[in-house]
Image (cartoon, rainbow, N blue to C red; front, top):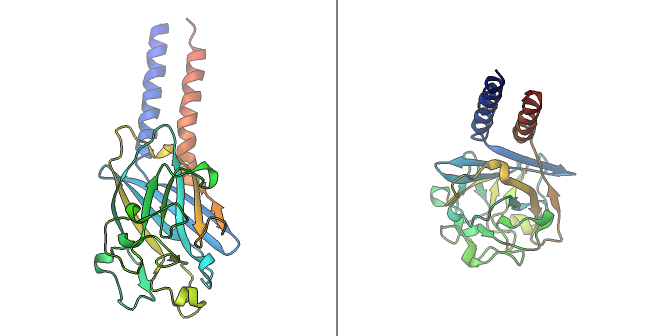
Length: 250
């Protein structure tokens, strides 16, 4: 009889674990807002690759380069995957402004965005980053595949940073209007070689960088409610199993 109780507890725990794993198949989204700045980063597993959708969600006008979303930093707990750069493209509904050459072919903006792992000195102790500007952390060898849309051939300056959702593209200082290209308002990145057993719940220490220097605005992100509930599900599962085991009288 007691063995039957144990088996029942284990079976129930496995069902909960299965539900949690299904939940992990949905995107994990972090967001932040401070004053006139707001952003989100959605992480998802797509075809065995890590997809990151970075969006400037602010409803305020982008007037100066420090209003531009230029990077997202994050950490990956429990492992140290290098990940490979597959692509960086405009998210559906987004477009490029201020580039005299017009829209990039196929929406490819990889020649203006970089990804690096093992980076030190980032906010919140993060070691991974995706950036359109150098920040003394990202160089030409870190670029995603794609043509150079605005010299130099390196992540540099404000060009191809992300304008806000509420930006009035007729306004802004010369650092914005004369940038040679800005994106409104989202970019989708694809990173490959995700290791076996990788879970989206390992992602944390997310923050958003604005402008072209680490001393300029950076805002820490928190999980959105759906993501937070998913992360708590894993912790709740461990507590559930512990309670069930205590209730079984050997």
